[in-house]
Length: 210
Image 1 (spheres, one colour):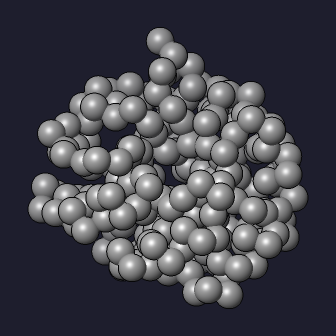
Image 2: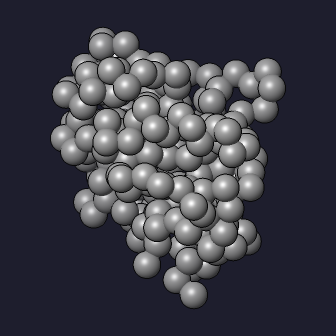
C-alpha cells in the first residue's frame, strides 16, 4: 500500500475527506503567497480534527518565531521545510515537531539529485517535488511533473515521498516509474487553486489501491 500525504488543507471538511480517503499525513501550508496558506491558529483548529493522520506543517524558509507559533498552535507531528534551508536548519527545526523534519528538494534533471547527499540521515524524510517554473513566486503546488524515473535508482537511507504533478490519472504510473512507497499531492486533488475536492481525493486513493 502506497502511503498518501494530502497537502494544502484549509477546512475541516478537507481534513475529514482526506482521512476518509486514507491519508497517512495531512499537510497545512504556511506561506502567504500560496492559495493554500493558513494561519497558525486555523491550522491548530484543523490539526485538532485530524484523528487518524499525522499532521505536517509545510513551511518555506521559516524563522524561529514562525516555527514557535506553529508549534504552540498545532503541535505538528512533522515540520516540512520547502525552501532553501540548510542541513543545519533541518536539525534546528526538529525541536518544533513531535516526530521530525521532512526536507523538500526540487527535481528537474538527474543532477538535481546530488542535493540529497547533504540531507540524507539529517532529515527524517525527503520529499522530491518538481522544480518550480522560472519566475514562480512559490516553490511548490504548481501541478507540474518531471521524469519520475530519475528516482528509480536513488540511494537514500531515509524514507521519501514522490511529489509534483500527481493526480488520479497518473499516480500509479508515477509510483511505478519512481519506485516510490509514499506520495504527496495538493493541486491534483483540487477543483480550483486552494479548493480541495473530496471526490478527487477518493479517486486518487482508489487509483493507488488497484
